[in-house]
Length: 159
Image (tube, rainbow, N blue to C red; front, side):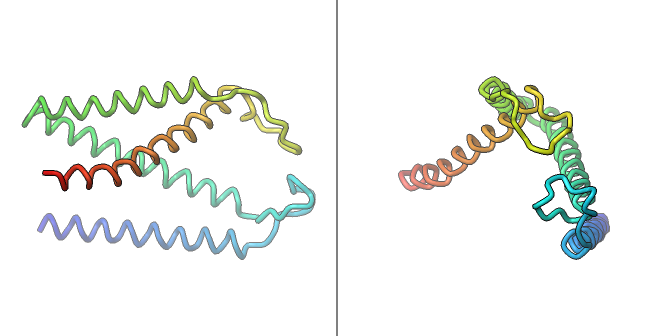
């Protein structure tokens, strides 16, 4: 009974999320262009519902992170009760991730960008270094993933 309820709930949430995403994408692609006085750069196309699309992406990202952290914490607490040594090894992975983020933040460049027409508050060294941090971290994780895909099968064949 509980499994059926979980499947029904997850299916309903998925369908609602997909429908909202389809509506938002439809508004973005077919909702028209911004008024000429609202254009950031006069010669570029600017869909009217760009903000809505970005806010929806932020909402999806935030929900994903919240659910991911929730499952990680509950799994860690359950593992801590059942096998403390194994649970603490998972904490080591989190510490490595934090170290990666700190190192890539330090590597980031805080030089202000010359962006024509931009008057926002995000062109500051801390935001620029944070953007570099995320990009560099993604590059490192991509390389680690590719290496794992290549090296781990080779190691398993030797056994």
